[in-house]
Image (cartoon, rainbow, N blue to C red; front, side):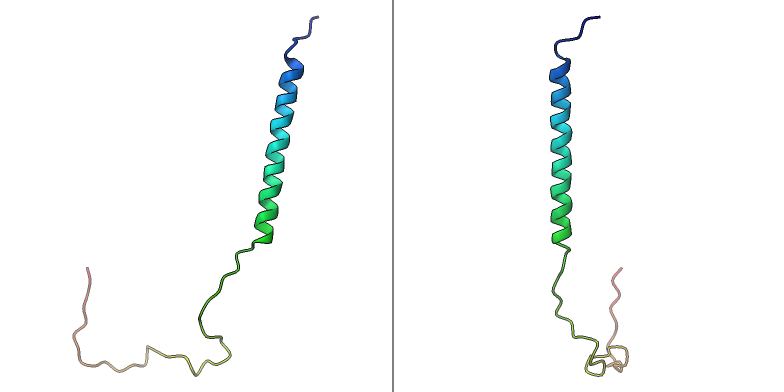
Length: 69
């Protein structure tokens, strides 16, 4: 029973590729965890609901409506 001389080299290359992929996966997970996607909006808070403009109660001005098809 003779052992192939390239077997240890192939095993080492597969191990290095696996460890590299695992390291990249861990780095991506840590990056996504730290940057959770917070964003800034310029909307008014819900603490003052009577200040916001209500478009539903605006009376029609008598102008024709335009319909885009």
